[in-house]
Length: 203
Image 1 (cartoon, rainbow, N blue to C red):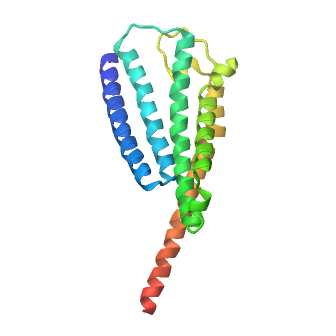
Image 2: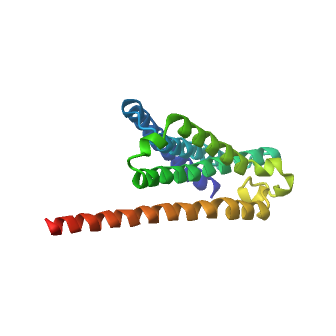
């Protein structure tokens, strides 16, 4: 069972890494040609997803190298990297949504608002928040869980209180913000469609 799971994880991780590296290369070329600052958020999303692929590859290696038993500290650090990568991916989705929302809400001021320095500050802030979320159990030992179970997994090294904190103050607010932004964009799009239909009927 471990070999099968490890093989599946290895294949998925390879596909995730390859696809996102390819997307990142295409986006980088497009940004250099067009100078579109907003695409930097999409590029960051691709890089964060590629990092998720690398962390999953580490988990696949663990499954394929049974009965390898990593130390508690090593396992905590590995899970912290996994969590940080996932947090960076989710936060990147939020930034992409904010960028598109701003482009729709403020189309005439978008390029004045989305400048290189501001994009850089947003991305640095994103990674600082992601690393803080992922490495919170390293900084706060009471979030760590001492387990005699040999398997290195998220639930074996982190306390439920850490997961509850992460969901209440991280995942759920991000989810609600994401839904609000896209619902608002849909509402704006419907208003535009109605306006176009009225113009066509008047013509």
